[in-house]
Length: 198
Image (cartoon, rainbow, N blue to C red):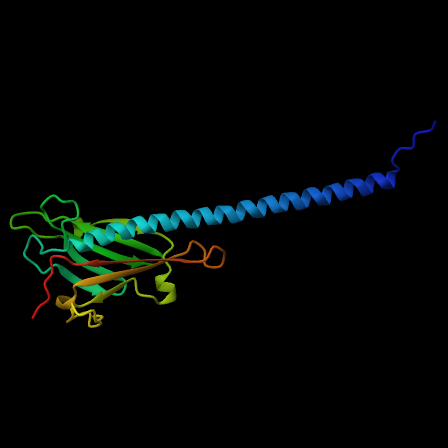
């Protein structure tokens, strides 16, 4: 009985098919991991931003008069909210600034010092609240301000004393040209210690 083996051409064909199959499997696995990595990074960015927004809302709710006696709100802007609040509950009021710069949302905190107490710009401590913020690129306001009747305050100079409510709208996307798509975080804060002027 004679056993027939593979010919050289049959061996080449089998090796070629095997190579194509392995290449397709490896490509699929790599594509899965790339997509999964991007989704995980986006999830991390969104969770980080969510925590930052929660802290911002908490700080804004407690906006109060400064240790110098200054009005609780310093300035309002679509990309920056500047105010006084006792954010660390130590009975000393901090000057707090949430602001966007590029694709970052920052928090700046200045403690009062001296007697009488004053706030020095040189003492501001800044930290990153969120990365990959896309509001600036899309022309979307992060902060919007409202008076006691629910009307939006759009006069950022004269309207400071009318503000009693602030909304936050933060757009986060680690890479706008790849999936997953952007995620929008929305929250709001009623400024409890403010009474609108008559």
